[in-house]
Length: 340
Ligand SMILES: NC(=O)c1ccc[n+]([C@@H]2O[C@H](COP(=O)([O-])OP(=O)(O)OC[C@H]3O[C@@H](n4cnc5c(N)ncnc54)[C@H](O)[C@@H]3O)[C@@H](O)[C@H]2O)c1
Image (tube, rainbow, N blue to C red; front, top):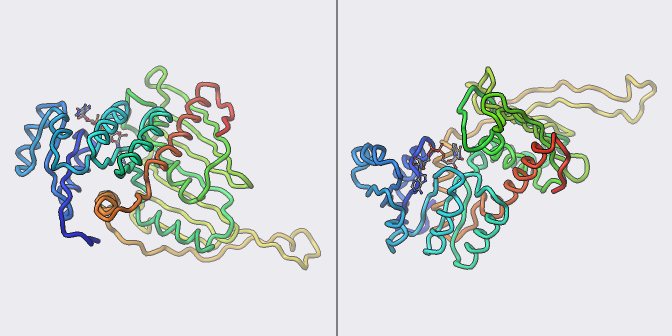
């Protein structure tokens, strides 16, 4: 990957449950040098100092901002802090990788995008699934016309936990599904509606069903829940020629291409002859078993080093956020259809 021998010096702000995974991956990348890890929790910092002796740990991200050596910052704080931290990093001339969702308000995300352009720095959002080899393969199959016209896509991201108290299940889990559907449909939708309910904590939805309508005939549907008996992470794509299943937790093939559908017979005499159901082969598609998170981290550093635009850039973050914000309005209004 590396066309540039220089290591990029980076820092990470936010070392919580997800942040530790990012820290592990960035620290393992030969293309960069992790100079700082930053968190408000001093117990965490003590533990990390033992595990990562070459990294400086601090509880103040001012240290990171002031250090001219630091070229890029990974922001893995809870979502309400993304805007402030990312803004300060960009203003101090750092490239930024910010976890999803980019911010909680569209105008603030748009401001980050504008600022990143002004200061000529990369802004990338952690839409992890776009870096999953199965999604990359599925997008390629769709682009090559293998599935035909995409009729509809639905996703399920369900489990018991992890229950959050600062954001509902839509903000916590649906960014992944929205980013997948936008990527596979290659277009921005016209409207969204969302129905959800709060059972565990008042006012914080535990389950939601989102419906997304695209121009033409395409539709998307997302089911997210942290109050579910099964761990399910599936994306199903139904096209005019073929169908596909991407199952993130399958221990067999993660991506299956299925030759099923309905064929029209132009020389029909009866209705039975007009529409013919096709039950063709199911093929497990070979995909690389590289860790998506490692690929995502590599992509960020590659974009910084070689002045490339990230696949999940700030604009992509804004698109996902617009759908999240509209889904939130819809939830508040009993499932009303929201134009985008
Ligand atoms: N891409 C994915 O698959 C994925 C998965 C889980 C979470 N996330 C995202 O990662 C982010 C973090 O999630 P998490 O589950 O690790 O949350 P968490 O609450 O476990 O950790 C957040 C950490 O940030 C620290 N922090 C908060 N404000 C800070 C500040 N000003 N300076 C330094 N540290 C600060 C907290 O002390 C905490 O340790 C969220 O945006 C979440 O949406 C992404």
